[in-house]
Image (cartoon, rainbow, N blue to C red):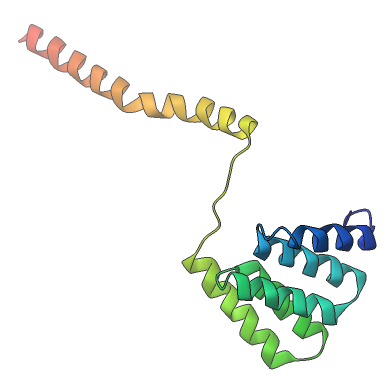
Length: 135
């Protein structure tokens, strides 16, 4: 909905999701994104602050709040939150979940690499064996 600029529908859906109390930091973060895209910086600021209240380690919420402050001309607040976001990203990196296609591609790539030490060992043993037969 955000990509298709259907902000009102997205906001209504996320506000409804908040009633269930699940994944609140994510819901507030996405709500902030929609408010930001729609130009409502005051509500975006509020939503990002709520995301941070729910999850103090939410680096993206800190970053986006810093961007909101920059747009509002609050440079010192902006710098403070952008620096905090960077520190959080370093201390608490995001867990990356690979899609099934990415997992299959990784297995295809890593399988030959994981077999390489075994192949090298077999070659070394074979060379040693052959050298011992020659002498």
